[in-house]
Length: 387
Image (cartoon, rainbow, N blue to C red; front, side, top):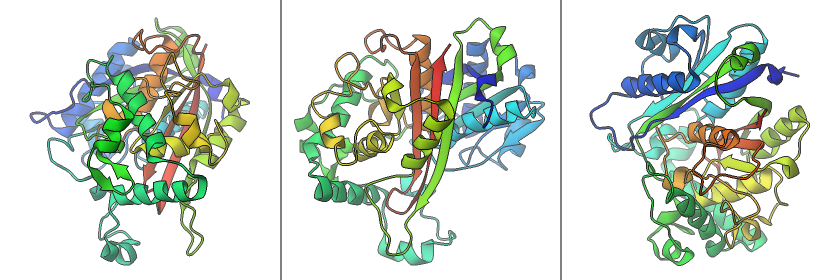
């Protein structure tokens, strides 16, 4: 079992911009790295490990290590879509436990809004091995998640109004975030009255597209102890890749079933111990499935679990995405995993906005889902603890 107790999240930074027409992607990576270093109280020379994914320009870490002027002894560019930054926190901890590095920097950044990039461009490349079988049928991203939502409705009686409550909760949180792209509180009727994008998902069921990015610094325990920051350590982690196997199609559960089980097993914790959940919210259905698959309720009960404000901090049973999430705040580089870790750390430090800060928040989950939910996707789950 990895010695996660040796690794602490010591620095975080979320870029304040949501539109960056005058900055390069590499510059955004550099700016979030600088912000995380300042947050941690570390110097660039302290970084000896670097982690990035497919959003990094150039030849992954080869280009970025040079651009950032780092002197590192360990790099990692494993990519599992939008959940990559969450997986990389665990990978950094494993590298630290193995003695490969002492202070690891993880960055995510992009300009999809400025470049008018389509989300499907991440998964609908004609060179991919599956594309010859799928692209002729135009498998669009929103339709992928809509099909999963419709199947959940068919199997379990979930309603569009229940899904809308996810957006309502995120909007209640986003009103307190000055950097959030969408700060207006919405109602379930607002969601249901918004244009239908892919039945049964409406426009307000879909996440936003933003520029910007974020960074995380993970450090060895001894280094963390020397810094003047609240101590947040990694308790457990899990990851899994799921894909449809021929005619064996399962649209109502995700790879989060196994990534969550592995994180709980490594941490010795259960869903009942968790005070706060940061989870991927590319669409409202993504949140509902994650809540079920991470064990906060039984399969099929997610609709009732998320309804009537139950995800709103200070009101509901499980506060979720108190920064406004990808539905209202930020979805940088079309990869939302980074912001999930950042807000979880804010909550554990007691640094979230006072209106949404979870009382006595000592255990939190950051969970990501990257890829196409109806075909192939990767999930990563980490459990973080305030020491």
